Image (cartoon, rainbow, N blue to C red):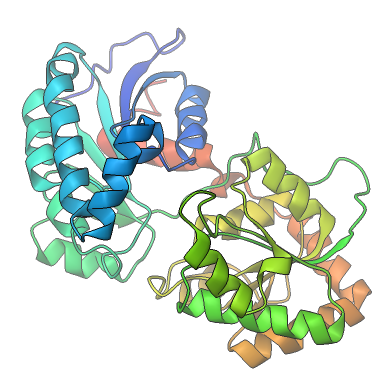
Length: 371
């Protein structure tokens, strides 16, 4: 790693300059930017090719490649071309630190180009597991350090030649997620936000939830981008055949919008997908920060970091999920007590600001002491 100039005047902004490379579909980059800015850093955002930014004719070309099974090749060619065009700008910008979010969407060729274009330390913050995207291991070999959300990935990544790996869950954005400032009207029984794929574990749990909601009269709202407005007829038909469309709001919510829905819900449901073995997803901390009752499937790291029925509630199986939903809807006092303890707990160490501090300190040991 290139040594950081510890003689910089830390009382003036910026104290460092970070290049942030992220995929266009990942809204979390806004929170990461705010985390760096809270520590006085300047952040330049690098958002490579993403299909939503394409012109209409190019979108059709994108879909044709998808239908004939060549979509990944098309994506790689577009991203590689983008980096080749922008490599001179990356070389000419003297960053103190380069942070790559997720990483699975890149290729070894692109990572080699990034490595060659900068002398700055390169950090990869992997929001997804190698179980879901095995290509992460290839990408992280070119990084100086990799942060992971799934503890089970550490041994695998170190065994494939990664230089340095440590566990770091994605913190909540304290500018977006916070307890309600006034008494919120809780007009939603169960609220879920996330993405799912028909046939997945999460999808099956949500389909079961919708079936139970019809018979039990629960007011359920699922905020998830389930189908494309133009190309999503087949997806819509699948959700409709499983009785889910009546409960789905087919949107992606901004963090501030999402926080308001957490406040309105009696139960905020959090279901991990298959890639989570021990680690927990960013939603876990977002709901805690909102100070609402969270019902989440029990993962090893959740049981290690939090006490069930203290600041959140857990379930083990599909049947257990339904049983606990009914329990907490029937026992409002218990539900409100858990939510109150979630609001009262000290959470600053779980914030995005704290995560970014850990990233900077990993790249530049002693950075915080020099401020």
